[in-house]
Length: 332
Image 1: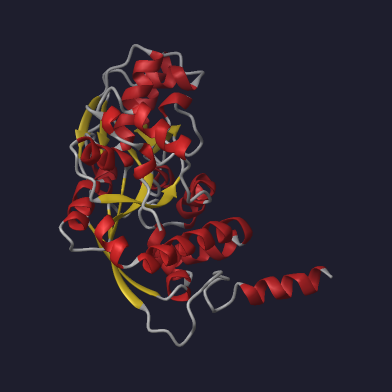
Image 2: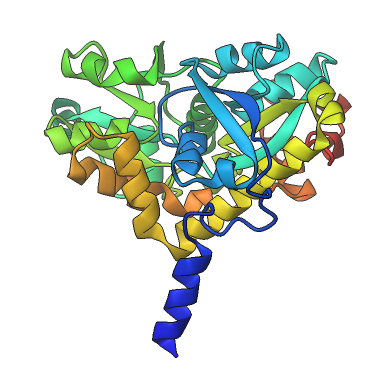
């Protein structure tokens, strides 16, 4: 019985797009869409990973991916109409809504939880060995006075670190802003003491021997009140959704199926990831996947999730009380 069951599971998740329910008929012409990625990190490459698994094709879509290297750049491309979808953090969306701009909404929650990982160079870790770092709160306090590279002042990673330091007290971090891809070299040359970035950049430093992971967002090592439930989301515009509601439905189907594959066929997802990141060492690749995979499995945000995202940012973004959380997610 087990053998027969595995046969039908394999058949179901075969070349037709990994078992995508409600997939488009094979004779349908795929709909082209453009997706702006906010970076080349694990959360942002999730759409590419889903494409490598055949899920976009299975749902009648043909994506083109554009790397913007920042959430602001990706969102600007979406607002300008250059792309139909863009990845980014909730901070950017809430800032727009607080300013009265409601042209953009959430299509899918790509990554639940905080994807940011603090990695420090080994010399810095050695210096901190004289401090008490036997708890995660103590590790947050130990960041006091350090120069930490981060993607941007508006990134959820900076928000999580700032809120963490406020919650535990006694730490002032000196942020230096740069693209995530530039962070490993900056730390190697001692331009910064460490950085906060998404996988695979922290794991690369560990595998190469010059860095150590200090605090992990995927493992929820920051104070719980500082951890976002929407570290990275996929945005689209209201106008596009009103004209093409079937595309939004298909995109959501892609990520529902992707979440299921991560749970049911992790080896297959890992192999697709290996194809996308061929230059990443096997050690860093596997460590990154293990650290992040479960955060890919919840593509929907509840009303309570959205209320929490707003509440978390009331100290950093003005006029959030004017936002109706029920309008943040695009309606089908």
